[in-house]
Image (cartoon, rainbow, N blue to C red; front, side, top):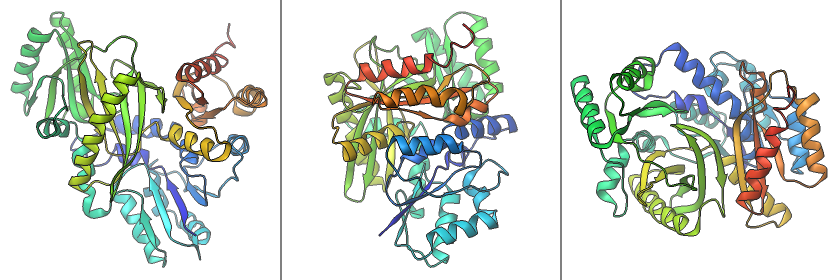
Length: 436
């Protein structure tokens, strides 16, 4: 029997070789944002498994989540916090490695599930192999690592648009130095009056800046962004028309699993995005209107097959904008698991254990809540009342309660997207009324 080793190396993926010189503030913020949602990896696998999580997961939340889902809690290995980079910390912690070795000793093949490909994941796989274990990566082998770097960089979408019929990207220019950037911004503002400048990489909205035509003040704000945002300091940069969203439809996306035989799984989603920042996501059937869903899926599958031909393997997410002009634009590829993964895993688990097929999930990983909330005293009672009513709603990202600006994640499964989103909204509201 195989065992899943679940390693949410989110911060390491976000900070891997981007070509940008990332300062200490950018690195700290990236680690903190990854830390908020790393516990969602508890949902990625529901079989025989071992989790590697940063120290600090709330034990009450962990027990409640597994009880609500009728799962046996798996063993957890947590390295001492040093850098906030999970696998690097694990490889430097002899005690944590010894515990992991004991948990895996004598087991069948180890299937290593990660957020995405990083050099540290290959180092961990090598260590497990050195212990005499057979290791199966659920994503890329080391020889194909370059495809993850290539597809994750935003200019790859421009290449795919040249190669694949039906793939459209926003109109724009690619620049390689400061004089080109100045000229391209001025030209694109005159043409389109609403422009977005994007770096090759980014994290949680960092790496892009939106400019609206409005004279010197708007441009001043952009040049300040360029100084502040480490992801915008490296070239190439894309200067593109900012595509206005069609009303009433979120930003479409599709999560794909690419295996040796091709694309084996495709899940539609619709994201809520404010400016350039992700806020929430609806996952699965009903997340998109039928016509837009079919069109999005067709383009996504073509991109997935192109990624397969390059040698890419594992999960990936393709993000789109459905423009007010009716066109569907590819904006980026995330060559990794996405924030929809815990919703995808929840739907799969409920279908297998309860027979509830065709459900739609909704997730808000970073909903702002009142300061001072505790899981045991404030969050748990609300969710227990919902569980008594057989509502499929679960708290996630509970580490965020300890943040300077507290956040909480809420994950829901319901018969329709409308019901799922309503339950998320109502649940989040329960934690922002203490001062009212």
